[in-house]
Image (cartoon, rainbow, N blue to C red; front, side, top):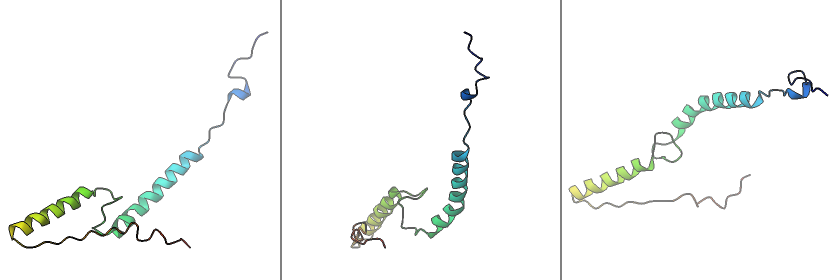
Length: 93
């Protein structure tokens, strides 16, 4: 018994699905359009989850404040408030 060539058998062909490719292209376009708006809406003090911003920048600012306070012999008081747990009991509506 002789098997038919592989290119003739219809079950050997699989359809190509382009939906994931289209979805990726669409989401990339949407993200590029809203990224600038989102970046502009963030305050300068916010360093978390932002491109080209780092917590190290804020640490450097604090170190600089400490150096200036020591240089001019001025008292310096820093207050750190963690708002992360402030709204953990609020239920979304």
